[in-house]
Every structure is written in C-alpha cells, then in structure tokens.
Image (cartoon, rainbow, N blue to C red; front, side, top):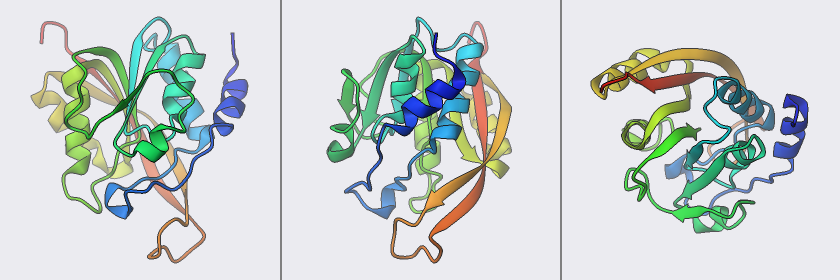
Amino acid sequence: MISKKELEVALEAVKWKKGSLGVKYEQYPTPSDVAADVLWRAFLKGDIAGKTVADLGCGTGRLAYGAELLGGRALCVELDLELLEEAPLEERVLARVPLVPLRRVDTVLMNPPFGTKRRGADREFLSAALEIADVVYTIQPAGAAGAVAALARERGFRCEVLAGYRMLLPQLYSFHKSRKRRTEVALYRCERIKGR
C-alpha cells in the first residue's frame, strides 16, 4: 500500500505543460500536494479502490494517475490532445466537457475551469460530473459553496466541503503580473442521494 507522502512524490513526477488551447480553457496544473490530499480523502471514504474513476479536464492526468495508484480504474478525459498524450494512463478519452462519452462511472475527480474566462464553464463541468457519477470530488473557488450545493441539489445530490487549500498558480499567461499567485479554493464532495 502506498502512503500519502509516496503518493505526492509519485504525482510530482507527472509533469505538466502549458496547454495548446489557450487561456479560454483555464488550463492550470493541480499542485501535487493538493492532488495527493484530494485523492487520499477520496480513498479513505472508499471512493477510489475498486472503483471506476474519471478525471474530467485531466490535463496530463495527475488526478487520474493517482487514482490508479490507489487501486482504481482511471479514465482521463481531456479536450487538449497534446496534454492528453502526456498522461501516464492506458485509458484516455479525447472529449469536450460537457459532451463526455461515458455512460456511468463510480467517482469523478476534477479540478475544472472556474468560469472566469468563459462564463458557465464551471457549471458545465459540474453538471457533466453529476450526470455520470454517484460521487463527485471537485475543486472550486472557496466562495462557491452555495452555487455548488444548489446545482447538486437540483440533480439529487448532497454536498459537503471537505477541505480548503491555498493553491499556487504559476505565471502561465501574458496577463499574469506575478510569477506565482495563491488562490483560495475548496474541495467539495457531492454524493447522490439514494433513490434519486
């Protein structure tokens, strides 16, 4: 069994590169420490080992790879072929969210766009995840709890905030003024209400 620290080290080895689709798609890496914590929490709740896990907007597949290391069957879903080809996974799906060609998975893990460059992108990702999974882990802005919970309720889910992070965003785009910027985010876990 891998430890949380070993998981973080393994995730750090999954290199990230700037995507080819541009800022409109809000492509940012999930820091390995944050990814390891998200995965570890999902693992402890029984949502990874022996489950089919999809990472929507996977980039180079850091979350999906971690799910495989923890005993899940991971599917990497990404629109950017250049990034998808870097993912160290067998099962990769080239697709644009919300048009995800998956019928059902057990768990979705994702660090989706926050909708700052394309209004509603965050809602598209969450809607797609709630459509195909019974449990969804999503990283969202810290102040988004009300919006996340409302959409989840509409779809027959209940949500809780599991953790907060100060995520470090590297200087990737021309409009970034500083080399590194911290942004406050939260990890939300949404679970389908039985019978819904």
